[in-house]
Image (cartoon, rainbow, N blue to C red; front, side, top):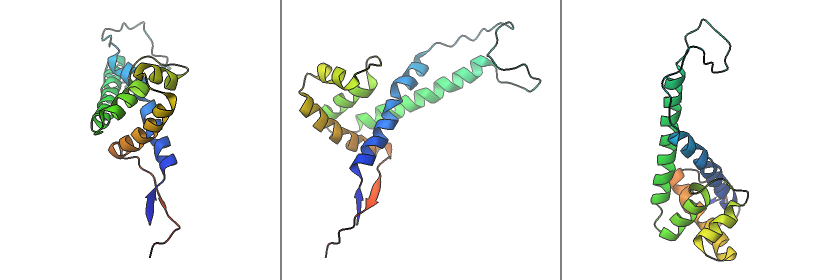
Length: 143
């Protein structure tokens, strides 16, 4: 029998969600398309063709925006609004923090025990939409 490994599934979902703020920051940064010849991107001089800085940066922004849209869509697909709000408060909104769970608890104005119970369930819910559910074989046989 195949069952969900809840611990690994929650860890996989958290790993994906933890990159959201970084991707959002990249997606929102302005692109300076006028770069003078005196500017260097830190790479050694080469005769090989190199994409202009602005083009590489635009591609990076587009990739980051696709990632942000993917996460936003996965969270929006969760049926319970309470879980959507929890995931947005913990992983998507605000600035990086040393205590993101505590910040989310304050923002949602719920008890810590309720927050962590809901967080476990919300991570399992979003893992289905992010396609990161981890399965394991159960040793118990049902007859």
